[in-house]
Image (cartoon, rainbow, N blue to C red; front, side, top):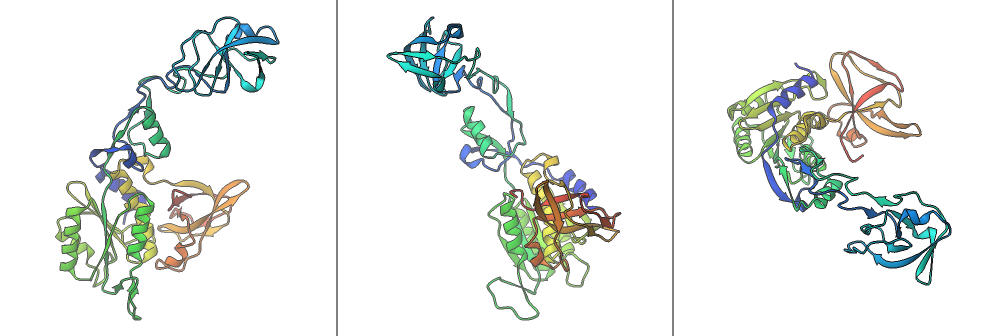
Length: 403
């Protein structure tokens, strides 16, 4: 068995960002840029007022009170071009271009209008309240490098530089195949030897939560031929297939056999981690991927977040170093672990005055999905250590990036 970190490096060697495509800006949210976005002009494109007030010549403010005649008005979007002459000023509003001759803006709160003039009693530094041309970015400046995930602010940046569309990496498509003759639909009546299929809805929800919505799941009986047919059909339509169950070494575990039957190359099967030991990873050219996740729900969701979801992020164009985030946080209380394998322990975040901490969520087994409902993610506990003291820094792997 290899370690989880070694397994992730194996996955990274095989997973490559999908081909670029151009989408409208309204469709780009959540995608990753496949090209750099640069400023198409200086930002701001001209000196602009940061306040409502009066555009003046600083030289006229040397004597106080200062009385200046108001010779015009300029609002945002106005092409006002008259020069501000000595002894005069222009009424100006936030976002408006500074008129020629003016070099300072006096805030409206620091002045008083009287019969077509303005009286200024307070001083203002030269250049006060002016946003300078190009102070945010000069024309040609790199604003968003390729690989940036597009959120609301990035949409705004693209719009500000005239991008009505964006070149992004195609989002990967996924299918979930749940194996097991004992599985029944959620709404079905179940007998004592049957279980409701919780892995399918869980993984589809986790995919949607991670930005890969629209996934469907299918249940497949423990029959090698039927499983191979379903897997082959899924690989023809999707970039990744997630299989749950059937990856161990029992008499009814047929995932490995089906994976080989469709011509996939198995790169690892079995990891030094708990839960998630039986996890399988295989590839099919070109750039298609299979993850065999354990059937126990907690094992399945742990392996999904540790390998499959990060691999999907990489396919979607995320930089490799951002695909598998881990936060170094202090323990809120002591916890224990068995040596020998990396342990992924359910955990929840704790808000304290000193900042975030993390605490373990007790669970009974790798089938304990109920406990997972109380967790925000997992602690990644190294195999060589058994005791972790309060305040000790540990790696926390979030299962929800919107925490």
